[in-house]
Amino acid sequence: LHKFCSREILSGKRYHCPTCADYDQCYECISNPNVPRHQHPLTAIPVGNQQSALTEEQRKERQRSIQLHMTLLLHASTCRSTKCTSANCAKMKGLLKHGSQCKIKANGGCQVCKRIWALLQIHARQCKQDNCPVPNCMAIRERFRQLTLQQQAMDDRRRQAMNGAYHQQAR
Image (cartoon, rainbow, N blue to C red; front, side, top):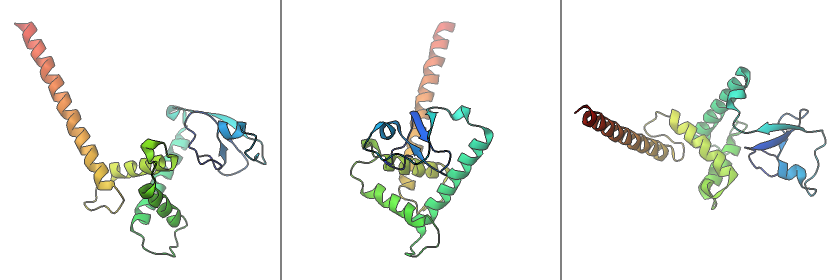
């Protein structure tokens, strides 16, 4: 996620600062003369479908990061404190609020909503609670269930058609 424009960098190159803990710039911002220059030199890193190129350590770190976000998501969904001691509780609450109020939404191109939706879907795939407090969890799980049933029905029809074709040839 780029700090200046908040755009998620999914393809092309991201320009990473090896000095700062978590700083990346997208191509559009690094090319734009109106965007302030970062104080350190940036390294161009190709971005794309490179999941297999991740090292085992990077894969584990990514999994750890996802689990931390899942824990925070559940916490923020149930926390009613205005002075919560969790460092990122207010931030996650703000993201959830954004997701519920945004007019653009994920399918309209809002990058913040896309990230929130991805977290909600990851949570819903793992969740087993009957009355989950995470927003949209139950609806997402129901949608997954419906899609699974549709896929099973399509597979069954395909198998029946193939069996019918084999039986026709055998006669």
